[in-house]
Amino acid sequence: MKVFVNNTEVHLAPGMTVRHAIIAAGLTQEIAAGKKVFDAWGNEVGLDGAVSENYKIYIKDA
Amino acid sequence: MQHSKIAFVAFMAAILVVMAAILPCGAADLRILYFNDFHGFAESSRRIGSDELQGGIAHLSFRAAELRKEKPSLLLAAGDMIQGDTWANLFAGKPSIDVMNAMGVDAMVVGNHEFDFGKTVLAKRIAEARFPVLGANVTGLDALKPYVIREVNGLKVAIIGVVTEETPSATHPSNVAGLQFLPVARTVRQYVSELRHRVDVIVVLSHIGYNADMELAGAVNGIDVIVGGHSHTKAVKEITVGKTVIVQAWEHGLVLGVLDLTVESGRITSVSDRLESITPALMKKDEKVAAIVENYAGQVRESMGKVIGEALVDLNAENARTGESNMGNFVADIIRKESGAQAAIINGGGLRTSIMKGPVTVGNIYSVLPFNNYILSIRLTGQQIRDALEYGVSGIEAKEGRFPQVSGISFAYSPAREAGKRIAAIRIAGKPLELTRHYTVATNDFLAAGGDGYQVFREAIRQAPDFEIVGGTIRSSNIVYNDAGRWLRDVVVSEVQKEKKITSAVEGRIRTESK
Image (tube, rainbow over all chains, first blue to last red):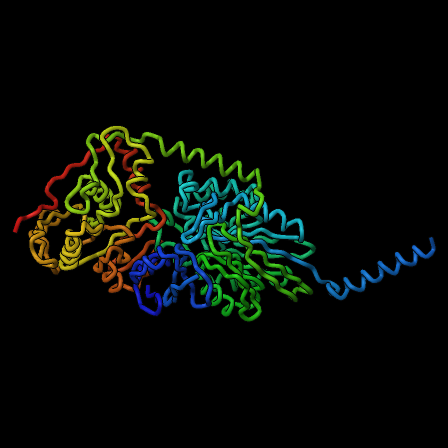
């Protein structure tokens, strides 16, 4: 499953979540530092949220 | 007296005029309260970057009851309610059902994680629920209802439940054996067609994710509202696709969704939606729900101290970042056995503490494996296994957590050599590794996603982006086992409970060479 984190493509196994996308993108430190994850519509999403093919997420300051 | 009568009549007439202006003839109010992806997070907690307690199902319940008094309401739960936090997991999801019964939930849709305890347990949970549990696109589990019709404030409201078709791809195959997950849009279209002329409002209670909700709204006419879950989206305001209003309320009971509708002649004429934060410091709690939460929380605390077996030796994780450890062997062996893989590779840094010889409690195992990790098995080439091991020992100078603990594999490495050229004599199942041959290798989801910098598992996943679900099981060229619904630590607890006496030794799986 192809997912984009800050416009970088990562590939995940079925059932993996936003958390895994962030691990795959090597950005876990940003979350530890207090940044939040948002979807393409600007909604905050939880780390355990499901992702889908071509899902786009962005890590930003809250 | 006559004057006061006239004044009263005039006052009432004015009220009627105002009411008529506000609420057209035949119009009725409907409030939908909603939450999703609760995952058994019953107690308040602090989130990263915040000092404030958030969430807590007893507080959410109190607020829901207050809001229900204001307007005729429905309380809906959009799936993934019973699995996740230890509070729910230790009792196979029953605490969540007890709480939702106490809250007076009107309907719930099954989420993909509702299947994680197996079909039999789910049927039992559904039988305990005093509300309908929906799953219109699931066949093979009769306890699930496709829809329910509720009458609220004179309005007939149909609630159709659907869950993601991908449910079988991330749970143990036995959990969904005999079940079929039908295409969502086709299913909803069928029920909308059946119900549209019978009701005033059609709500789809969905567990398919926010993007999929939007696609569904675009694909199927006649849905008035989609109350969603699965993607844990904090949709602070509703969106409308065509004539369908879509909402979702984040996760873990951190917020309560409040959707106010006015319905006139089967048409929604006004919409107002908001998410209310559940902030314990500012809110009262529902004492009945609080008592249920505390009862199970007390049992969790008790369970953590429960002796489930005996360690015949010290299980040492202290050196798991620099060499073979018997704790590493113990956990890696369980992962390999559970998944049926030929080998297992895990990160030494994931083993957080040791267990001393003597009685072993559930809490001991949870301390060793505190993270919500699960088991996958991925098909790797011999070359990829070699690359994984080379990478694993490349950070030994800094005692990096990536150091591999293995099962079914043995190898030698030389710390004195340049990183990337340290590994030698790799054997699998006692035979020399063949670089071009494929092997099944179990690991945890953290490494599989590329955690600790491991590339080979994610590379193997990338090489097999397509998967299909055949007969309820995942078929993929590279992912051969994927049980996202059962935490590794719970697998280890089960194994200790089964074996009773546990032991493990450093047996030369990882040998250090001086040159």
